[in-house]
Image 1: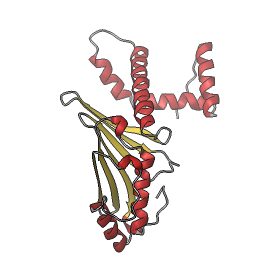
Image 2: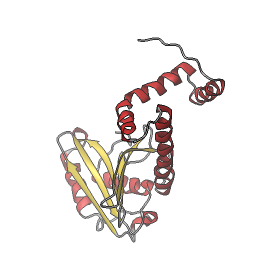
Image 3: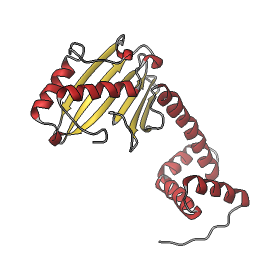
Image 4: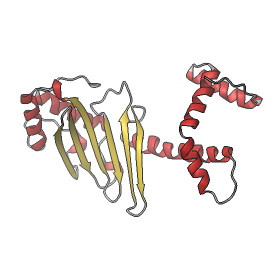
Length: 225
C-alpha cells in the first residue's frame, strides 16, 4: 500500500461528501474507488488522449468521457431498459456500434436480486429490432427427461396446448425458442424480431414465457440459479 495526502478544494470536498453520504461510505473509500477505476482504465484514457491533435489536459479528457458516458447510459438505461421494463434490474454490460452497417448492439446482464427468469438479453437496433433473452441453467440440475421435454416445447412453442403466452406475443412478427446444451450449462433462448423497438415485448413478459416452458418441462429452479 502507498499512502498519499490530498489537498481538496472546499466545493470538491462537499461533492465527495455528498457521494459519501449517498453510498454510506467513508469519504476516503469514495476517493479510493474513484482512483482505482481511473487507474484501471488508464490505458484507454491514454489511447483516447493520443487521438487529439492539440494538447489536452487530463481533466478535460475525463470530463468528456464522463459526459458522453452519462448521455449514453441515459439512453441505454432510461430509453431501452425503460421501454422493456427492465430498468433497475439490468445493466448494460457490453456494446458494439457498426457505422458501416448502421447497427447498434447492446447486451444487458441481470443484477443480483433480479426477480425475473432472464439472466441476460441483447438488443440489436438496425432495420427490424431484434431481442434475444437467455436463461442459464446448470446442466447437472436438469435431468435428461426434462431436457428433452424442454427442447420439444421450444421446437413447437406455438402449438403447445395449455401454454398461455402473454398478450404481447400473440401478434408478434417473429418469435422462436431454442435450448442450447453445452458441457456445463443449458441456455434457454427466446429470440424476437419486431417492426420497431416499442413493439418488442417487455422483459417481464419474456420471463413469464420462460417460466412456463420450465414448468411444463418439469424444471424447478429458483430464479437466481
